[in-house]
Image 1 (cartoon, helix red, strand yellow):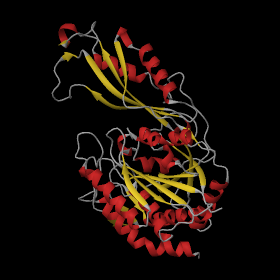
Image 2 (image 1 turned 30 degrees about the vertical axis):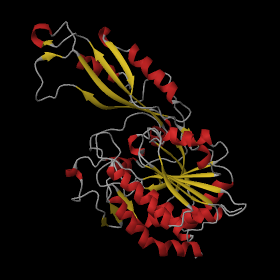
Image 3 (image 1 turned 135 degrees about the vertical axis):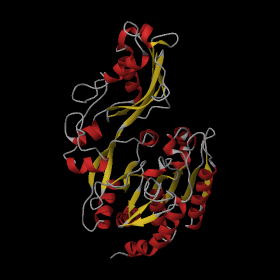
Image 4 (image 1 turned 90 degrees about the vertical axis):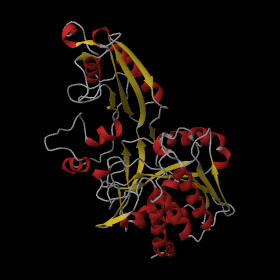
Length: 446
């Protein structure tokens, strides 16, 4: 067993203690919430990096956004520099009744897993970086820069501006983004494709004011029914997205076990999968159309009236090869062209667009990563996977640093349930993630 592996194991008790302390900080960057915990989380991460031996550690922000933590461990002469990214902000906890612990921000251990909001997404990513630095005694064999974001779960509204403002400061030969997942707890993965995302509000209007449903119902339409008919045009009879102009592609030969996917998603017994093609294609390389919410009177308090207008928030995941700009144009054209009964349709983008990305996983950095993962997983080689979710800033990294190798690694697994209740982290897999990153820094030496 190598000295690096032994050093990671020796560091793990302290790494876990700091992970649990970080989880206690409810760093939620959403509008309307108290952002003091986000700032406290940034302060904590900065302190941990200073204690790990950073030559420089400070906080960066852009355009009034939440702080990101930057740290630098200078490269020994002739060695490359690696930029390590993760985020310390988390999703809201949602319905507390769905959690199996009283406080989602207090870590609970059960059956080899740690449970708590952010314990996997992405505070484990933060601590994997710190574990690798501690394993090397604060003097890694290559240069290391870190960027720990504070608003990723809120959509990273100022990150692109920050990356552009500090482009020279953050330049690196290799970028490691620890915010993805592994194929299985026992099978490591390199993520080589991610979908993009476009969100829009669509408002349907048919009347100037609400009118009596008995006096006018029949010949006069109501906006909720019109909205329902419009939303229904987004899919064909098989459940595939029916928006002309959106890109679809093929995935690798990997595929999911249907029963396992049903279980992981919590599908009810009679619910069917939608769409066509292999499950990996439907999840990784085909677009989606999802209704996130509807603005309308609540059922209990609604009046017997035809509603004049109704609004829905729609989300579209975009396959690699597409672009946010193309998708927004296609979605807008589809919604306007399919307005039922002459209804007025207004489409308004919500937030920025996120481009999908595909990564060519060839070259020395990827060879080093495969060797590191294989050693950390006791001989099991990593597979290349796609991810149905979106990390739009990867495309920004690709644009700003076209010569850099972008490695997207995983701290989650198929049971982590990020963004949902009972989020969790496999303890043994986390040890392997930390080990793989420490080994990667060693194997990137020239």
